[in-house]
Each structure stands twice: as C-alpha cells, then as structure tokens.
Image (cartoon, rainbow, N blue to C red; front, side):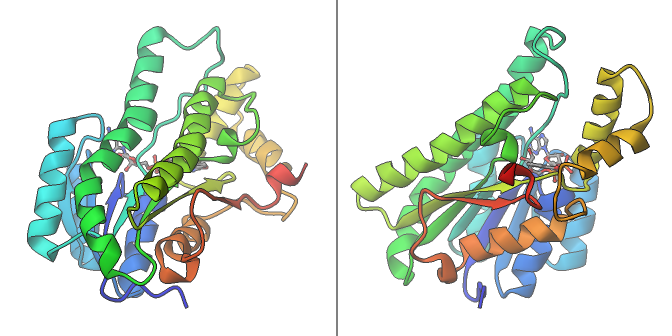
Length: 262
Ligand SMILES: NC(=O)c1ccc[n+]([C@@H]2O[C@H](COP(=O)([O-])OP(=O)(O)OC[C@H]3O[C@@H](n4cnc5c(N)ncnc54)[C@H](O)[C@@H]3O)[C@@H](O)[C@H]2O)c1
C-alpha cells in the first residue's frame, strides 16, 4: 500500500516542515524525488541526507519553475507527481495586514500553485498515460480553505482558492482527457515553523506574548487531543500521490484531528 516505486515526484517548499517530511517519506516509498525551495542551505542539507535532488525554486517566478522542471526531468527522466506545498502565513486581520503583505501572500499561495501546475503540466501529460492510475498533483490547502479563519482571513482567502482550483483543474484535465488526478489536502495545526508562527500571531492578537497559552487554545480545537506533526500530513500526501488513490480526483483529504467536525 501507498508505494511510489518507479515514480518521480517534485515538491515545492520542501526544505523543511511538511514538504521535507513528505520528500523523505516518498523516497522511503520508492520514489525518486526533487525538492525546490528558497532556503538553499537547508534544502541542500536535507536533499543530501535523504537522497533527493535539490533545486533552487522561487514559486512566484515562472522562469524559476521552468528551470526546476528542466533539472528534475534531466536528473530523473520524467515527472509523475507534483506537490504544490510552498506556502506562507501572515496572521493578521483584515484591518492590520498591509496591501504589500497581501500581494506577497497571493504571489506564493496562489500564483505559486498556478505556475507550478502550468510548469509541470507538459511532463505530467506525458507520464500520465504510462501509469495505471495516471499522474498526480497534490495541493496543500488547509482547513482554512474549508472553514473560516478568525486568525488570518487573508490566508483563508488564498487557501479557499487552492481548494477550488484543485477541483477545477481536476475537471479541466478530465475534460481534456489528460490522465492527471488533482487532489488537495487540508491540515489542522501542524507543528512546523509555520505552526509556531500561528501561536505567536494568536498571542499577539490578544495583546500578549504568551505563545504557550495560544498553543493550548489551539490544542483545544483538536478533538483528537493533540496537534499534528508533519508526518501526519506526509502520509496523506503519499497516499494521494500513489495508485491507491487511483479513483480520487478533485477531492480534499482532511487531516485535522477533528477540528472541522465542529
Ligand atoms: N503548519 C500548519 O499548521 C499548516 C496547516 C495547514 C496548511 N499548511 C500548509 O502546508 C504547507 C507547508 O507548510 P509548513 O507548515 O511545512 O510551513 P513551513 O513554513 O515550515 O514550510 C514552508 C516552506 O515553503 C517555503 N517557501 C516559502 N516561500 C517560498 C517561495 N516563494 N518559493 C519556494 N518556497 C517557498 C519555505 O521556505 C519553507 O521551506 C503550506 O502551504 C501551508 O500553508 C500548514
């Protein structure tokens, strides 16, 4: 189950966090992996450790995506799986966030996903028919792309876009006869650098620096009784990328410790 033998995967924003854990798990599952990030030294270090290819990638740049795809296909011969994982978070309300912060958020969380999808498409169109259940794209959305976020409505605006872009591209590629499945994953609070940033911002919003209290508040939103770890999400991404998810496209996998059951 959940094997990726013979598949080649590319993950954006995978120098650390959920992307890093997923790259590692994909290699353990038999895939050849390339990772791209703006954090070159962390990315190179991780790539060396797990046996992946590292390429510098700024997801907001079309030229950067073209170079990353070329390097991946040159090294590994093809591309079967794209994981649009790179993302950023602001943690400010509608009145507090500046227009520049919004533009940056859109550039990474939305333009980055569009450019990644477009850059990978020629390669996925080619590899899809050669695979029993087609090629696969997995987009990192969030529970903030399913329900409202009082912490960061702007982030929620971008992740809601990723949720519906996933469904729309699944439909478009299906209509065009491409054998490419597109699914999204929706994490609850995951203990990564971004997860830590949410505690800082949550505390700041109530006028304190008490990140431990903010952590406890967030924990209370997860009926399962703990926060998530990167591997919880990596397992879901590996599943969606694998042939075991061969009848899934346009779907969203919620891995949130029960948060959205409320
Ligand atoms: N951590 C959570 O609680 C959580 C919850 C829901 C969704 N997510 C989503 O999961 C994804 C991964 O988040 P994470 O928690 O691992 O965060 P993280 O901050 O640990 O990792 C994000 C990675 O994206 C990279 N990145 C940022 N801008 C980039 C750019 N322009 N080009 C290339 N790479 C760039 C960063 O350098 C970093 O390595 C994000 O899309 C995030 O929105 C996270």
